[in-house]
Length: 447
Image 1 (cartoon, rainbow, N blue to C red):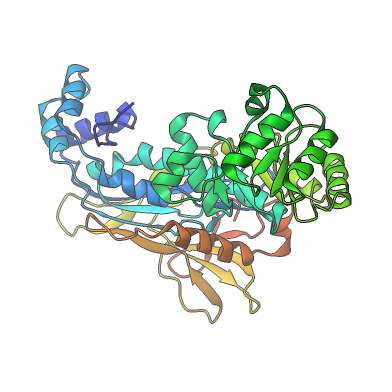
Image 2 (cartoon, rainbow, N blue to C red; image 1 turned 60 degrees about the horizontal axis):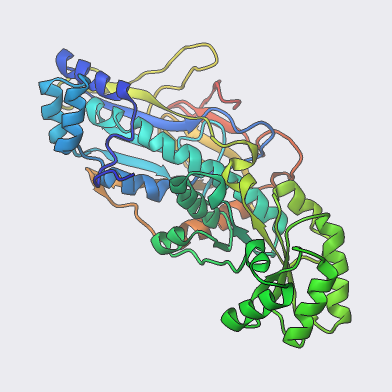
């Protein structure tokens, strides 16, 4: 499917019907502030990971309505002539602030702040939420996996378990959270992520016997390749692989059975045969709990697929996009006033926010502070969380993917030790909302 170089219709109809009604009412150009945040983390999770920032900025750059899009919308009676005229000239001209990609987030963290007119800000709701919700879900799962893997590399292998476009996004999000490489070639081309892959069981079954398959792979890819050894008999395959490479084989992959016990048996056999440098890679529906269980096994790397690209049981972060402030009138320079929902279980906190993460003298995070006014210098070690991404319609927040990867490593290192636990628990640090005087507000987000 192609989108004719626009992301404008990756949206919900009600966004355009609101614009249509606001244009009719004369309120479409009223200045507003919207915020994107998660009310809670997935059950039992200690922290979340922000991902999708770069993809969202790319989507914003391509968010415009050409004649094919307008023709469709007119034909479906979704827009009238006045709305079509507005959309034909649409280019976001406001400003956007957000948490840096790869940083951590907690309940109520204002991950994105969009400032602009109602009409130009409201239409970004779905595209921002669809990107942030999925990418952050994958990155959050990936972060837990790389924590459990410690210094053992993880390979993202989930392309066959998700739709073709999400597969690319998943590979990108996983790389931000510490995965070493991906099997997805489009992710490699688009984002410069290292790629890896050798052979499946089908390649072995193609040949008359396993030795012919191994020799063919080695002849093409060299002795440093990874041979899949569990098509028939693992012990026989390992012995053969060592023999035909004189012990110089790069790695073997195990994709079935009791991975811990099998890895120990294979490691012992490799060492006995003198292949002490041959690595062991394991795959087979791994998740963070299985990686934790494999910590004591002689494994050198992991391939992770289904659990990763589905957020390890939490395929969305349940993020929302809500108006938190608007101008008192349509007059230029009219003062902004906080607005908030009072709905049961869906209340919000009004006012444009600032956010910092408070660290102790050892550099360990202790609190997330979100204020509806400036955060006064308290003498504490506070790390500012919001960075400007868009200024007056110009994208200024682009950065290399490696910067997001480094930011994640630094932010995760700030966690208290409880944040590294796989056991279910509350967010590892609390979120506190402050009013303009610095007093703590009761919030619907657990702070």
